[in-house]
Image 1 (cartoon, rainbow, N blue to C red):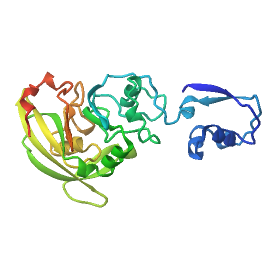
Image 2 (image 1 turned 45 degrees about the vertical axis):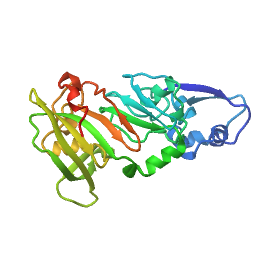
Image 3 (image 1 turned 90 degrees about the vertical axis):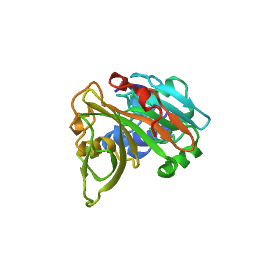
Image 4 (image 1 turned 30 degrees about the vertical axis):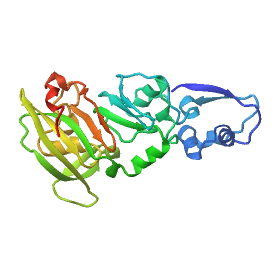
Length: 290
């Protein structure tokens, strides 16, 4: 962790009071970085204190970007649509993080989406994609627009279409409803059941086969709900884990072959760049898919 040295200009009864006066920070944030004993120490004028850079820059976005580069698909006064490559995070968890979409936007001086929802690190992101998932992702550039979409996301988003590759010849086309319960550390994995049970969340999707070639199937998935890992867990439950998705039983591959292809709401955003799917399939076959 990087640090910055700070010299106090006047006495203060406690370090806690001094830091709160200087940075207007909450007690909860202070406890994250300092022990109770340290916070109760006296502060003397001209004393030097070493402060964690992540603490000083809490909720700020680092303008240095490192990672696979996204691309801008479309930008209006209200939103910006990006292609997120696989193995890139959506947003940082602290200032020192540099491998996220928001770091890319900061580096590109696209501050519109970074000045929305400023009390949270995810800023104007309207939804999330897993680190391993590629595809189109949207960020609001106006606070009112962000509030409107986030508060009525299920109603606003008409269709969410994903491309998926699985091993074998897929034979489970149609609409599917299953019941989900998070398991593991911080709900890191989903347990899926055919039957409703206590605290279960309902997940719905539709699956259509687009192409079978070289013992692999390209699927078009219409996501009707938006649970964490839903497509990954649900396809695995159907007996067809996604290629590269070892967490849910998929075979090892160069990447997780899940791609957010198209989102529809009052406007349409389409990402034709499937980032790696062309290694196995001719994507011209899906351009007019319903």
